[in-house]
Image 1 (spheres, rainbow, N blue to C red):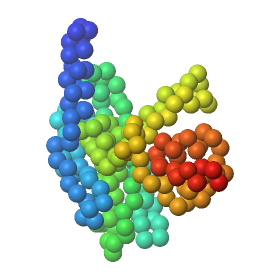
Image 2 (tube, rainbow, N blue to C red):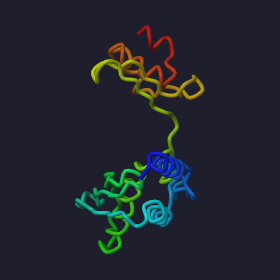
Image 3 (cartoon, rainbow, N blue to C red):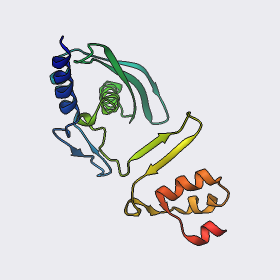
Length: 188
């Protein structure tokens, strides 16, 4: 494939992948937004022309819950490489494993697909952006920015205020980037 054609395919793919989800619903308890499973499945078929595979690696029972993990494999339309994203989920136990297992699989798939891109719900329920600029190596953090203005900050919860004075300087700065820390907590 000529470079200009490959670039055009890549641009179209990235534009498709970075669109807002086609449909977003509110969870029954109104705590979070999500993309319905049927929309995710349709978008997987559309975007990857049926070249996807989903597998559940693990499922196990917990106290009142089923926990599982799995992966969605998809063929990148530009590079033609097979890629994958892992997902995890837990669902409450009911009286029937025959009902619980499909729900667990759907939640694992939704969790894995979110990691593919915005179209699958990657940016839903995010209140702040996390951007980490690394310095020379992974041990030295150049700058960490959680939110960009004080408008994004919220009051620090009591547990954060209680331990704030005992934290190292770098960790204190992380908390300052997220929370509003009163001066009396800073002085101790």
